[in-house]
Length: 357
Image 1 (cartoon, rainbow, N blue to C red):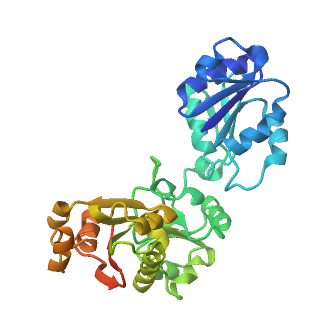
Image 2: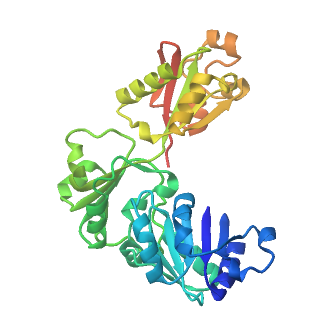
Image 3: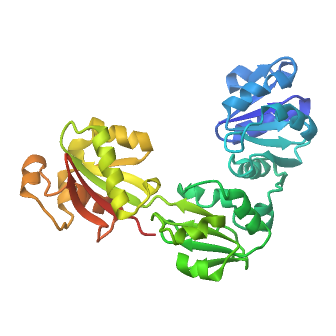
């Protein structure tokens, strides 16, 4: 949610206008400009210096839209800054509503995108100074973010970003994940080159690299990360069956061991799929909540519509389905061939599929 803050008469007009059109926004302004309809519109009034209000807003909201002079804003937020991964987006609008300026957390906090949204509402000029946006190139810290990709580590974000905007040779290797990550209406910059494999990229000796894969890299391949960022796309689908009462710890251990055997990353898991009978299984629910994975379940009739390699009469007698983990993984992923057809480990049966884009 966003907070829109104004302290002048014209600023109040702008704040109310933006507040009406921007989703998930709450307006704040000084009580000396109260118009009598604030309660009805959910507008918050405050008295005294806005400097006293900012610390609580800074901690509460995802972004702050401040109709206050840029210099004053810089001085007020300076003592509140902690880390670009946690600081909220800060956007400033001038008192005539002509310019909307992205001030803080442009990428990770979303200030650049928020600036564009607000500028569109006001028919104003968006002011964005982030080099990757200005140059229409890849924002390394946002690469794949809209698809849910995760970094393996943020250690090299800054030097790799520098290589991108300074037009050094940057290699991209993508083994899995969504392919529609280039959103500009211009071609990919000449300094960014796509390679079919990590080995091919290493042979080209790039200055930096972006690697997108669900695989755990080999020791030799890890050389690409000396100045590289590794992204984990959400492409792994786990089909899971288990005995009633199986603990979360056992399920978690089987998942970890299985993915380690396959040399797959836990960070690339997208969903856990099972039979409807297990939709309230405590151990399963605890695991998916722990990792924030999707949890999907199917009826026996749906599972039985899938051709599987290892049907089981025993499973059918207990569940009404000839298999659970294998058909569930196939149903969600749409894959004809699984990375792991089925493995029984203690009280857990697991199958693994990949989403192909």
